[in-house]
Image (cartoon, rainbow, N blue to C red; front, side, top):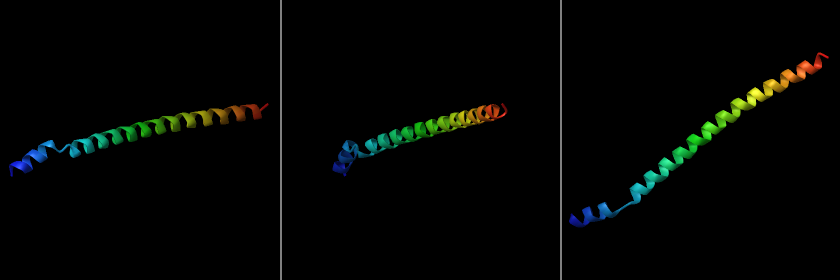
Length: 59
């Protein structure tokens, strides 16, 4: 039983797994934030370009 406790205390596989999960979650969160920002700005750009084309069509 003592050997089991010593091995359990020295085993760092769980800590490394938690580190990777947190790191992966952060990367996914940043990717979602970047995608949302790009999507919103692209929509604004397309709307502005469409308005400019319609304004040029009136002349």
